[in-house]
Image (cartoon, rainbow, N blue to C red; front, side, top):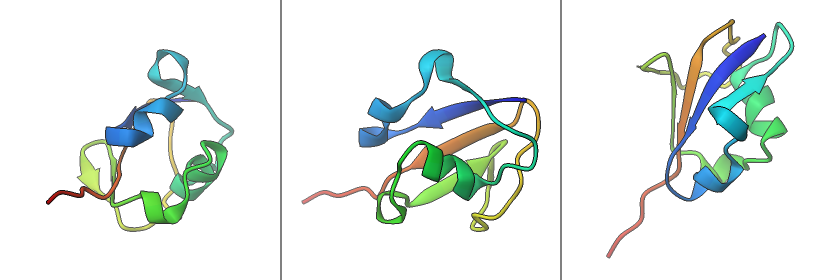
Length: 75
C-alpha cells in the first residue's frame, strides 16, 4: 500500500521519491520513522491526515498522509 510523506525542515533530505512510500499493511508511524532512519530526538510533531498524533504506534492506511516536523530552534 502507498502513503504520502511530508518531511519538514532538515528532515526533507530523507523524503522518498515522489513524496510517496510503498509500505506493508499494518505499518505504524514508528515503523516509517525507522524505515526513513529518523531518530526520535529529530521528531517534534507527527500528523496523520492533518491530525496531530502523539501515538507512534498508530497504524497507517492506504493513501494516508504522514507529516513529520523536527524541533524548531532559533535564537
